[in-house]
Structure formats: structure tokens, C-alpha cells
Length: 469
Image (cartoon, rainbow, N blue to C red):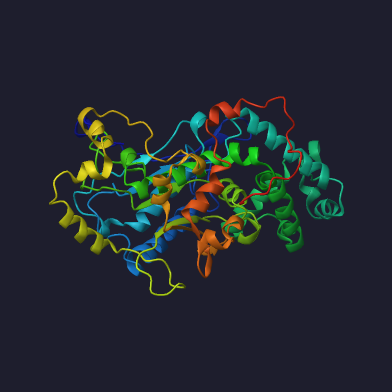
């Protein structure tokens, strides 16, 4: 954490040990499988294995966007072209830091590299995961869909099969495995997946890893947690709509070059908002540390969950949303053109000789920030629906395409299959206009207000409201 007083402070390095209860209720230092006592994780913290895999993810992103495509620079002197965001959950912040380290290791940063900005929110304002703890109506909806899943599955041959496998290890207070048992079936699934990721010393009895049993658990778990996004517009809107709306808002901000791509949030000197510390005029790359429920909710809300394999996201899964611009075409089947970082830097260097470039790119917004360090209000088309855009604004979105990749595999959104809604010859390249139109349908106008609305209304829609159209 930085401050204008930072030079007056000193960083304290410390060693963490985790305390628990002993057999006689006396305090006892917790230890790992090999007797480790230092750096033992709290429940829900990112483990060493998690740090390794998120670091590897950042390295894969570096190989793709820097080494192969030349889209990002090899060496950076600050990170103000990169939008970083994380939820208040510690493992999400740790994941962002590890992935950023893989993307830009020390050798790819200059000696004077300042601390990067990472955006966070208070739990009450968080929309980067389905926030049932702070959204009353969404809590109602999620409980209703969970109960429906319990009603559908608790007395089935599939659940009987699970009980034959693992009920002997259930606690006396809840001997039968069920969707709503204690622990819940989804909690058992979390434990199975966690132990699979961390080697033999953390393993449960072999029955927990039975192939058929794991398939049943996954099928029931994904229905309990994610069916609502496939069936209900309100569920999508309250659960993940604000976050996906933010993503589209930054895309339109990138198109308009008005700072709403995230630049006005991450840039500026310490204690002030403003332009990029290295003269950056736009965000080129954004990375958010979120959760498996975020990824699956987004895929399901876009109608792409089944195409992604329909299973619970594995550890260190990621979704990439790529914004392309159609440039010079010689073949209708050619992938959208891109501009390398070196070429863009050359063009920008020539452009800075023209007087008033800042104003032409950002209008009055950037001036109000730099002069008084005021937080700018929303501008441009970031939160407007497609139906609210005038002809000039709609025209700005033309020739832009969005591609979504899940764990490096391109996916197709149902509404983008319409011929005029995708690039000729490739349905995975959705026009920005079509993509925004799809997302607009479940982006709330006021998330907090919507969270306290419809409290007395039925949880399920009268008819299924398909996602991704």
C-alpha cells in the first residue's frame, strides 16, 4: 500500500503461525502434512499450489499477448495501461498478484517501476461474484433454486448411489448425503476437488474419488448453483449482471477513448486521479481476481456454459474477453486485424506533436480530474443500453468484435450465431453491438435498488427465459 507518507514508514516483515485448539482446549500451533508450522493457510486462503498455478496462468498470458502477438510491451515502467481488480476475498487478491507477476516478472519491469493499482470494493458493494450476502432478493432466488435442486435429487437413485459410497463418513447429526445435508453436497464436492489438487497427503478415502460418484456430484452441484442463470433474467441481473455490465462499459470506453475503459480508476500519481504515470491514454489489458462462481455464472448468463463443457470450473480456470477491431480486409475469413504495441507507440509518438491531443481523446473529463482530483461521473455510452444510443454512438461500435475464451478455448454465444451478429466465417467473433445488446438485457440499472425489489414476488419466472439471446 502506498501513500505520500510512505517514505516515513517502514515495512514490517513477519512470520505467520496459525493457532488452534488442542485436545484439552489449550492453544496449539497448527501444522501441515509434513509438520510445517510457518505459513500454514487459513481456510479459503490461496495455497502454495494455488500460487504456482496462478503464476503459470500469468506466464501463459505473457506468452500469448506479448511473445506471440506483440499486443503488450515486453518491458514496462508502470502498470497504468493495465486494469487490475480483485474481490475482498484474500485468495482472489493473491491470485491477481501471482498472475501479474507471471505476466510481468521483475525482469520485465524497470527499476523505477511504481506499485501497480489494484481496485477493490467493500463486501456490500461487491459485484465481482454473486453476492447473496448483500443482495436480499438474490439470496431469495438462490435459496429457491437450491431447494428445487434438493427436491429434485434428494430421493433419487443417484443420491442413493452416493450414500452407498460415502455416507459412512457423514456426521451423526446428518447421516444421509443430500443436496442440503450438513455438510452440503456442494461442500463435499469442494473438499474432493481441493484434495485432488494437493497431492496424496491430503486425500480422503478412495470412495470419494469414484468416477461415477464425482460425475453425479458435479451434475447436481452445477444445477444447484447455476441453473438460475440459464432460466431467469432476474437471477442473471442480480447475480452477475452488474459485473458483466462493467466489462462491456470498459469495452465501450476503450472504443470511445474517454477514460471509461478503467484508465481514470487506475492512473494518476499517489493521492490523485489523472492520466497514466507513463503518459498512457488507454487501458490495453484488464485482469480481475474472482471465483469459480463468477466464471460459471458469466458463462451460464451468456448461454455458453454447456459449450464450455457444463462442469464446475476447475481450479485456476479463467475467461478471456478479447476486443478486436476490423481494419483492412483482404479476405472475409481473415481474423480481425490488430495493432502491435511497437506500432501503436510509434503512431502515438507522432500524434503527440499535435496540440490538444488530450482534449480530443478525453474531452473535458481528464481536465477535471487533473485539475482538482475530482472523481469523474459516468460519461459516454458505458451504461447506456443499445436502445438508448443515437445513430452516432451506434456507428462508433461498428467493426468491433468480442471473442470469449474459456480456459483458452473459444466459445460461441447463442445470440451471436445470427449471421449479421458475427464475423463472416467465425461465429466466435461476436459484433460488439450484438454482444452489448445481449448483456444489456441482464445489466441492472441500479443493482442495490434491484436487490431490495420484488421481495414478495415468486422466485421462478412464469416461463424459462433463455440466456445468451
